[in-house]
Image 1 (cartoon, rainbow, N blue to C red):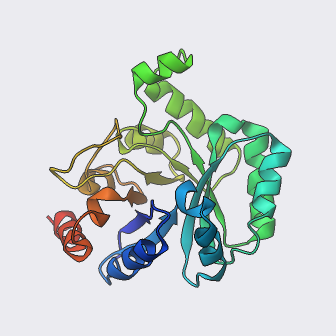
Image 2: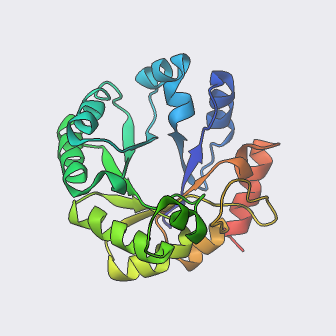
Length: 231
């Protein structure tokens, strides 16, 4: 049976804590891959650690800039040999997305580019404040279409939108953040679902989890996750 793919968010600049998270989330029952965001990547120790890290990892940079700057950013990551996933934001536009995909493939043949849609911390009210006239669902579907047209490997969106995006774009690899174990606080997330809802009901390909797993006893949290998915 194919293992559930879990990207574990290492959202800290504390290198010892990152090592602890990586070590204590190891399990044969799930496919767990560490995900490093801006906080860790921007830290002095973080960048050096990733240069020598010998396991597959996800680099969540949400690249969003003019095409040439985005390409230069990808080029600067060529020493990170074990980077398997990287994020770029749909807001950068079609030409930037296409260029980044092409550059990433040439830089590292194993690197998959994932397009980020509306952040899971936002809702319809937030979008209106920014100036969008489309509803959240409409905007996510529009951005997913842009990501598909650009030829990216997958899309990052809330599990609440996964079902209708998957229906229209069947072959897109779907990754969903905003995941919490039952009873956990939503914190700064606006569109939250459980791992079971995302992976089993909405059939997404992978989920991103952080606080539900790394707060408190990490090994116990992993056991809770396995039990939750096996319900």
